[in-house]
Length: 422
Image (cartoon, rainbow, N blue to C red; front, side):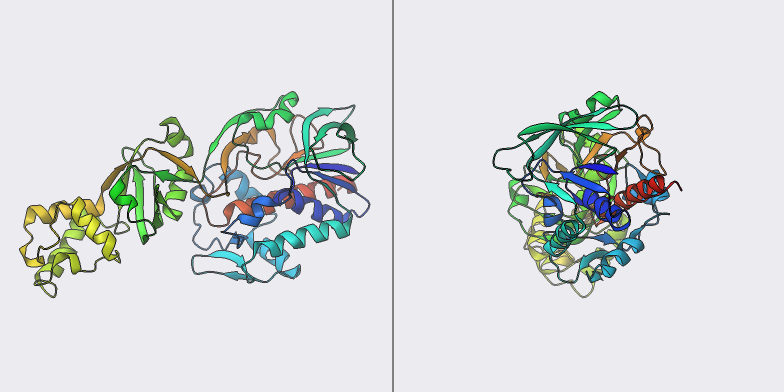
């Protein structure tokens, strides 16, 4: 069994290791176009590696996987987050579940997992070729594939020429998300349905100088939405020197990836700084506060809804309420304006920004191309797809990596069972 894995990322390594643990004489070669394998894994979770999620709060997979929820629900019956956590623990990587249900290695070091994967692949005899870009995959005879590749400058070693072609019994494509459709040109000759890739997890640019002066401010529970649509999300929000980021914005960008792209990332972003209270509820809360214990205080000195003093002063400015106003002096009109600002603060976005190096896309190889039980290509036997190269992506929180583990495992299991005749 000679297997080519195209892409040295999480799904590719996970598939390779799980195959080799059972089929010891399988000849597996990982082709990685970059200079390093597992580069994205090394930076995920801010370099701490958000391995997976407890899924405790994931009552609806469609809110977790905007694209691919049906597929993931089926595949989780084979290998889910609990299986992944056991897999890593059995491999000697101790994990911890945070209050937000994100799961990290106790070491808080993504390189622990990167090193573990590289070392085990080497021990099992998986050959890894870096700076080796696959340029074409073509069927050769019955369910065999000719893989064409080019070696980059300075790659060296492994006895492979600067360019070449090899025949493989099985090909697994795990190249991850591609920012452009041209990144999938190597499968173009296979006649697959490809969905135009677009960015999925990103922050939003907001050209408001006064807002940007609050760089670093964090609101632990905000609700954001796109005006005129049903798109909304909730969670921590971070103000940056280019606009807004944080889990609330990243989740919104994932849920609305295509709509935001269609609007050139220029939309009306509505922020509820209270986390979901409506204007009437806010008015009732503030009215009671301003007329009792805080009545004689300056409104700028009052702490409400966990909003920092810097942000509170800014929101008072947005609502045209003077800083020196005392709470009992605020009139009904000014109070209504403040409540509207707190519940529905509108900002015009001017573009999108990448989420550091953790670039995620939606789109890619359409799910119509694969068997949902095995991830084998419907048109071409012994050709498999796993990971973000498929039109599957998730909101932030460890869910994208879980998809990689699940799909990598399912592909490995499918190949092992097919090889054994089960």
